[in-house]
Length: 332
Image (cartoon, rainbow, N blue to C red; front, side, top):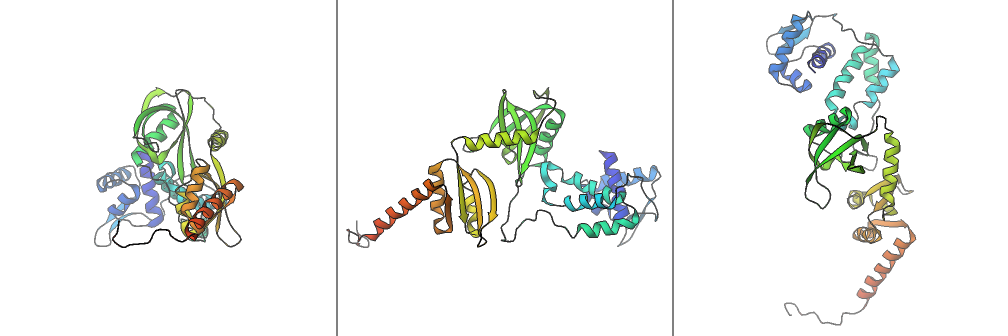
């Protein structure tokens, strides 16, 4: 761990020039005291780092110093730089590692290519927080310490103990055999088995985790893409209903708050989102779309359209009649 941090410290100084201890501490996510110890270690190892005192002081490297790292060609570096800073950088708690890797990517380029690759990457934007309809997506948040334990167990092949808050149930501890991690539309999932049965856990609902020393019961080789497709198909077939719906953009998030899954999304001819979503059952779908009134239209299945039409006709008939009871303010 410390060796990686020392390399990152050198790369920061090479790429940005003079930096204060506080700035280095923020970038490396350590204390200022740790940075000062690392500076001493680098000096003792012969790295020409020096301190400049004063208001605009800090630490810097002697001009011309260069670390020896494996080189990349221009397009390889550009691809990594363009993809790296996207919103996926926090996926599975690897944001700090990604930042360190990006610094190494830039440093691995010939000096003549460093500026052009960095400038070129700024011309690409991958997965922004909002789309052209100003719809904002919110990524799941998982505590860093919890994510570290989950990730370690997955990579080491150890059993994992998690405190999981399933929907509508109090949090409970359970021990699982982790298979892998999947992220879909900014939501993270842990694929696992429990007592031999397939289980899929939403990472944002894992309140705590502990890697256990016992080996997990799982195959040595895994095809996560195949497993995810199979579990998704099984999930969607369990008495659920798929609905094609067109919704007012301002109420899209409200709709998404009621569905089990989003299977597809594309803009309609008038720019409104057209989504294929999954509800728990037909009754749930009817209730959810009724709440949205004229801001949503079920396009399929026809049975759901008929149910909403009949409900609307009943309400219209009820209120189309004159009230049989006179209204007396304050009366019984």
